[in-house]
Length: 516
Image 1: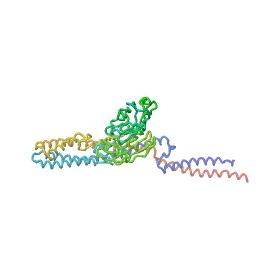
Image 2: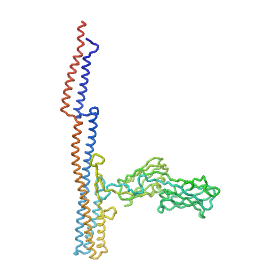
Image 3: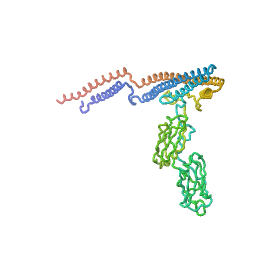
Image 4: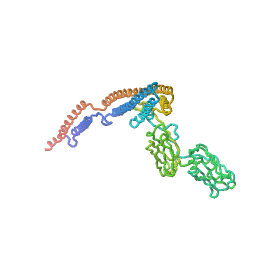
């Protein structure tokens, strides 16, 4: 008999520890309801479960997306229902106007209602929105037009090369420093005693491209500079030349040590930066936005072309090389981020770099609906333009209606046409309204088909969600009945282990009988 190491107690303790660990795991599963609480429980099962969870949550969000899409379509379709009603009323009036029982005054009264109905059709199109997005103007999503002069990557500033420099007439030896006056668009080159002048075109007359600048003293003496393209405005060219100098040697030609030379070519530039990002999501589509710089207030103004709406902003005093800054024209829905190359030392560097730039926007009438859990599970729904006007973006049927409404108005208003002309104008109007009704029919049909598709999509997503959830549950969730069996077994084993350990601890005490 041994008393130093109680092997029976060690064995009982080891088994009790195993049982205790298994009981703790069983309690964890029962309390959480999950078979897999950590990767150690089932590494492969956890991986599969997480992938299924990603799909399930994506499907649930896709269902909400599709339901929002249905709401969006119903909003547009409800407005088009009223447009249809007004077009039907317009047709009724046109048929009435074509009848020879009416006088010019009667038809003028009909025209008054027709014009009001046209205005209300346009008003409904301009008021029908979903979450701030216009649905019936063909500009559901506004973006920078692909042909816009101002876009991401556009240069702020100017950069070019002096490709040729000749001395004209007689010019005394010296160094002639160039300065530029933005107010008069005039350049001067002087060595302190002799001054030569050159005038650049006004900005509204300036044509970007290669330029020839001639400095003259009025007697044919001076310099001629040939400059490559790279300067968008006269001010940028003038500012690129400002501070540069031309050195003439004693033989009356450009010195080899001159700052500006034609051979080799001399690079010239203003402070430079570029457009890093443009957000026009809140801007009007199919519109222009023009920058203008006020050197007196040192503010940059952005003006919308369609209605003249404008907003002015203060410019940063300076921006270090490689730095960024943002101009947020919130009232116009345009936000632009710029990044500098050389750095901007003053507000003028930025202002003249942006002056006269034109940003052009375009609109896309299609809505992108994400109706599945993965990137390719989406499709586009067209929300067509329903404005009665002569805009180039307006469908031909509605442009024709606009034309015939104006033609009818001209025949019955202040300088009325003959009765036959009025009747013919009313008949032409009937035909135009029929075309407009047909166009709106097609728009509503497409929206209705898209809504039906979305509703089927929602139903299918519901089935997917149910089946994937069941699959994920089988992998991840615990079988409570089976786990209770395991729990009960472990609980009994733990109780037995404690009792056995107590007995094992008592065994060495029998040695005391030998020591009496």
